[in-house]
Amino acid sequence: MQITERKDNDIVIYSIKGDIDINSSPQVRESFEKLVNEKAMKIVINLAEVSYIDSSGLATLVEMLKKTRGYGGKIRLSNLAAKVRSLFEITKLEKLFDIYDTEEQVCADFK
Amino acid sequence: MFSAVKINKKISIPSSLERVREAVDTILGHLDKTGLDESTTFDIKLSLEEAVINAMKYGNRLKEDLVVDIELTHNGSKVVIAVEDKGDGFDHRSLPDPTDEENLLKTGGRGVFLIRHLMDRVQYNDKGNRTTMTKYIKRK
Image 1 (tube, one colour):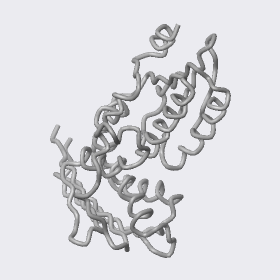
Image 2 (cartoon, one colour; image 1 turned 60 degrees about the vertical axis):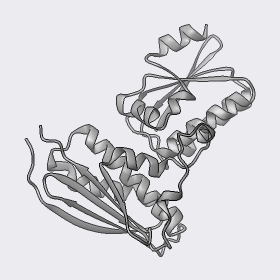
Image 3 (cartoon, rainbow over the protein chains, first blue to last red; image 1 turned 90 degrees about the horizontal axis):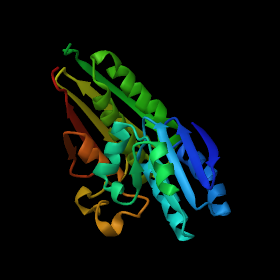
Image 4 (tube, rainbow over the protein chains, first blue to last red; image 1 turned 120 degrees about the horizontal axis):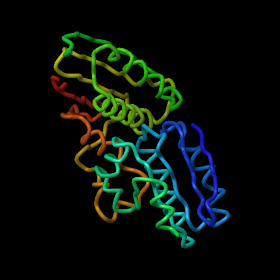
């Protein structure tokens, strides 16, 4: 599991590489705490290199969304693999998250 | 090519979340050469992982001396995986629907729901401590 962070003006882009499961979810949560503490307002999570996510991974993303919403920030997802996206459809989490096909689309929309 | 392979394997693992991946990889390893497509493998992997985690956490209360038994059978047309814990069982009918509007923001409760959606058939024994999941293999 690798998490890289970069900025595009006021947008923070998180790229996650690897499975998000019960073992790696704590690392995602911990890494994200920093953004919450900084009260980042515009966050993109690029999941292009995530081919597997389980219910604890989904729960971690929901937790991140709640925390971000708590201070008025926005979190958006991009580049989901087909199977990962299907989990958001099955669980109806697509109603909670703004999901974009590409990182460029999210960033353009944020600006 | 559709494989007519027959597999019957049983493994038992201690109830430690650090052992989940090892258990899932062992079972998937047995299925490795059966020609399952990526999507089917994803569904089986996720369902198995969710079932094992539930068995460890809610069945065996993460007591490492209590094992989770996993039984895999594959007869060429279907993969059947049974996961059993030593707990008192649970009532699968009493679980809230995680897709209900009021539950969407909850962080738990999606594991069993995902299993039901990703597998073709899910059965529970009367006690509620054994989940049997079936995936039918589509012929190419």
